[in-house]
Length: 238
Image (cartoon, rainbow, N blue to C red; front, side):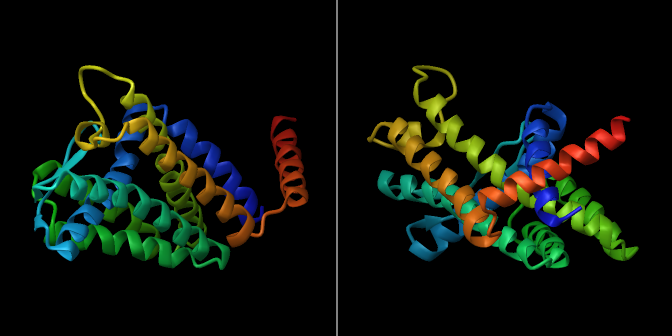
């Protein structure tokens, strides 16, 4: 099966897993960690506060110990976190388009190791990151190229799907008048619904860009790959 067929399958799988609480939390922590790392780096670059610790929680959320006084800076840091995750997803799919599956695995392992050493400061977060490193290191150790390919495509697909879901969540949370509000709804003077629509728009554009520019995945090719998938499924059923 071609790489493009696998990407379609794993995009659907990532969407399905996002509905399963236990698996959703485990894998969505990747997005959470990436966003928080971007928050930390944004604070360091802008020199508008101090932030050097990240805490990850069992519900899939996380927080940084950032101290930023300006509301505008807070909004920009949160927005940069969402946008940076999308740009990362585009970069991962760029690697997939050249069949550089090993580099995707190396990236995530490096990200986890650096995060443990520099930023993650709670036990659950450290244990989660270590477990992720072990899972990713096993196929590298045994030189299982097939497993490396499948894992790299799945992780890239999940990062993209979760980024789109997060944009929907920002919109949903903006309608809440009480309870737990989203980060943008709490700190932004502008209606959070506008921020959510902006995030959703750029998320969908990122998906469009990935399929049309990075993977060169035209409509005719989509029909061909879907037909191939259907034929394989028919063989499995019969």
